Image (cartoon, rainbow, N blue to C red; front, side):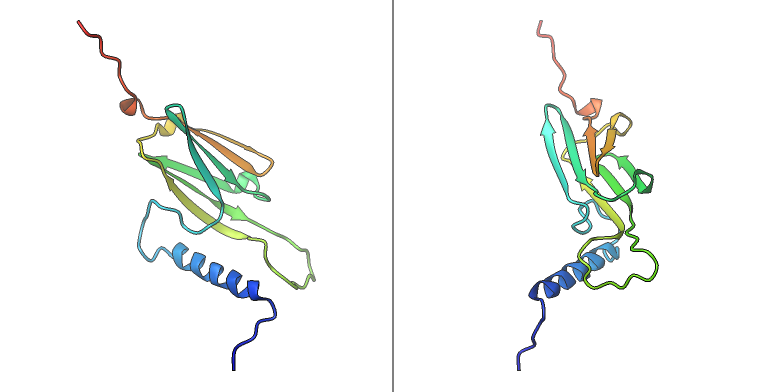
Length: 141
């Protein structure tokens, strides 16, 4: 007899949550790649520098932390959803809880020069290239 599911997507969501929990468990030690699928991040190069756009709807700015070193940036925080006392959950698809993402860029960055702007649930990071990574003009004699 085949198992039946009331909602076939619930099985997929359960698998996604299990995989994210497994990756977030730090079973391989410290890493420089993404840990899970939340929050979604786009990274692109603009001129010599990089820009990262992170979607964080419903996350309070006070609940965000960011660290930068060499060619990696770590973004962590907490998304809290409060349904009030006495609420009984019928369906849960919205992501909540603690998140931790690490992103890497292919060059060394200037951690002190990073600018971060957070507005309307979107975090924009302007990531400058380290001076040691910038091309130098050489005068020919």
